[in-house]
Amino acid sequence: MRHFRGAAMHALPWILLPFVSGCEEWESSARAELSVQSATDSTVRALAAALLPEVETLSGLPARRPVSVAVRTRDELESFLTAQLAEQLPPAKLAAVKSSYARLGLVPEELALEELLRSLLLEQVVGYYDPARDTLYVMEGLDSALVRPVLAHELVHALQDQYADLDSLMLSNADSNDRATAVQSALEGHATLVMLEWQLGRLTGGTMALESLPSLSSLPEDALLEAAGLEMPALNSAPRVIRESLLFPYVGGMEFVRARWRANDGARFAPLGEEMPVSTEQVLHPDRAMGGAVRDEPVNLVFTTSPPDGRREVHSDGLGELELRIWLREHLGDPSRAAMAAAGWDGDRYRLTRGEGGELLTWVTAWDSALDADQFAAAARDLSLTRYETGAGRVLEVHRESISGVPVVVILDRPIEFDPSRISASVAVRPVSGR
Image (cartoon, rainbow, N blue to C red):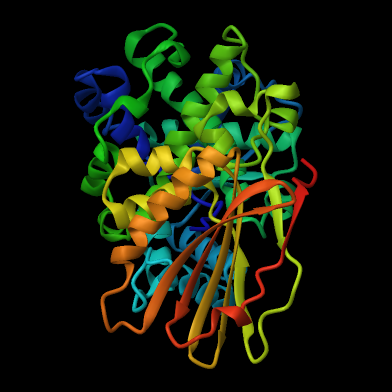
C-alpha cells in the first residue's frame, strides 16, 4: 500500500530500542530529561548544530552545506502533512488504489482510507524534513529530550538530500508502488539506523555499531506491530497491509542498510545511487542488491492490449514481494508459507477494470524459476478455494504460463458470468528501466 514521505514514525525509537539494546534504563533515562526546556527556533538550531558532526560520522555523509532548521506549530505540521496527502493521493487516485486493494482482499470495501491515512500521519507528528524547502522542521514546544532523536533521524534526511535530490527521487518513482517502497526503505532505514546508534551511544557513553547485532527479523511475528499499537492506536487498528507497509521502510529498511554495511566490512556508505534498491525483493534479500551479476533486477510487466470491450481501467500497478507476501499471509494465515511462496518474485503487474458484471482484476506475476512459479501457483490455488464463499458471484482463477521464456502466474479475479475468453492478458516482459 502506497505510503508517504512526511513525518517519520518517531514512536519507533521507543519501540525498537528495548528490542535492539535490551537496555532497561532507557525509559527512566528519557523520563529524567523531561525537565529540559521545550523547543524553540534557537534551542532546536543549537541542538542540531551539536548533533550534526556525530550524525555525519554515523551516516557516512559529510555535510556539503549548512542544514536549515526551524520549528512549526502542531497546526502547521498537520496542515503540511494533510496537503502532502492530498497532493500524493488525490481523491480519484485514492479511490482507485482502495478499490484495487479491496478486490485483492487486503482492505475492506467500506474502509474510509483517506480518514485513516490522515490519522496515521498525524498520530505521531513531531517533525519532518521538507526537501522542497531544504529545511528540517520540529514541532514547537516539544521537550528537547524528545527533540534530539527526531533531529538525529531527520538530519540524516537533510544530508541525504545534499547527495541525492530527494524530491526528484521520490517523484521519479511515484508511479511504481514497489519501487517507491524500496526507495523509501533505503532512506528511512538509513536514518533509523543512525538514530538508534546515536541513542545507544548516548546511553552507553561510547559507540555502538548496530550492524553486528542480531537481526530484528528474529523477533516473534508481529512483535513490533504489537509494540507500535501501544503507542499508535490508529496504526494498530489499520488493516495488516497498511500497518506492515508503513513500518517496513523503518524496520526492513534498517535491516537492509545493516546488511549492506556488514557485506562491506562495516564501511559506512549511504544507500544512494548504485546502492539504492529498486524493489522490496532487494530490501528483503539484501544480497540481491549487490552489484554485478549477483544483483537480481526485476522485470517490467506491461499490459500491451486495451481492456476488453465495454470495460475501463480503474487502476494498474504492482505489489512487489513485500505486499505479495502480505497477500498470501492474509488469506492463508501461514506466515512461513507466505514468505516462502513469495521469495522467488521477479516482477508483477495488475490491472483493475470495471464494466458490465462488475470488477475484473487481471494480475500477472513473474518468477525467477519455474519451481518458484509452481510454488506460488500452488499457494494461490489453495488461497482461491477460500477467497470467495459459495454464492458470492465471483471466482479466483490461477493459471501457470510463460511469457517470452519467463515463468509467470496469471490470476483472474472475475465475476462468474464473465466469459474469460474475452480477457486479453497480453503482457510484454521488459528489463527494469533505469535506476
